[in-house]
Each structure stands twice: as structure tokens, then as C-alpha cells.
Amino acid sequence: MLAKGANGTTEIARRCFEWVADNLQHSADFKRNPVTCSASGVLLNETGALYCLRGFKNLRDYGWYRIDCHGNKPGIDAPFSPPVERLAFQWMFPETENDFSGILREPLPILVAAIGANSTWDEMLCNLPRGGNPTVHAEPNAA
Figure 1 (spheres, one colour):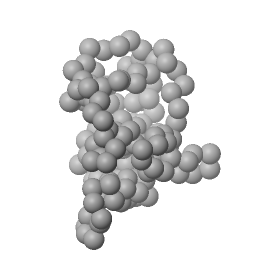
Figure 2 (cartoon, helix red, strand yellow):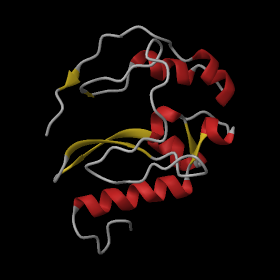
Figure 3 (tube, rainbow, N blue to C red):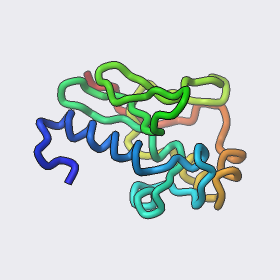
């Protein structure tokens, strides 16, 4: 559906990004339950945790490109604009937030467990793992 008539993979990625931004709500931004941690859960409930709506897309023309489809609103301007990265929020707490230099093959088990252990968006935010630098198996960023 989103790929029909698209001119290449970048156009498909842009359409998907815009569809998510326009149709799905971030759990904490909209104070919506249930907490979801999978693509199917996000689609079913039309809401998702921050970590499910943020990600990387390997675009043939640009390599790995970090995207954040929270959706634009007053004060937030995060369009799909490769190769320029435009995230909805900047890293504010380097002592408690991790920005990995590589691409994770699988979601961090500690993060999946923390999201799965909470049934409401505000419980989830209060109980996310903080700080540290968990051991991860990351693939090097591809250009």
C-alpha cells in the first residue's frame, strides 16, 4: 500500500515514516496505554513506547540513518530529511541515556524486560533502566 507507485526505497521509507508519525501516538507524549514493545503491538493499539517508534533505517543512498517519528507539533520539527538527522528530542541526560555508536542486532533485553514489566506509560517511564553502558553486540555503522 505505502510502496505502490514509489520511486525507490528512500521514497518508501519516507512514506512509512510519515504514516507512522501521522497515525501512531507515542505512549508518553499522549499518555496512552497499553505499553507496547513490538511493531505488531504498536500497530494493533495505535500507540507505542519511545523505543518502538525510534530507530534506524538503512537507506540505499545514505547508509544508516537515525529517524524519530514522534510526529511534529509545536516546538518539534523532526521531518524525514536524509542525510540530515532531525530527531524530535536531543539527548538531555548523557549520564542516564545511551546513544550507541553501532546498530543493535536485537533490542536490549534489559530494556525489553523493563517495558514488558509495566502496564502503564507512566510506570514504564519511572522504571526504565538508567545510566550505565550495557554490553551490546552492535554492528558497525555502514556508510
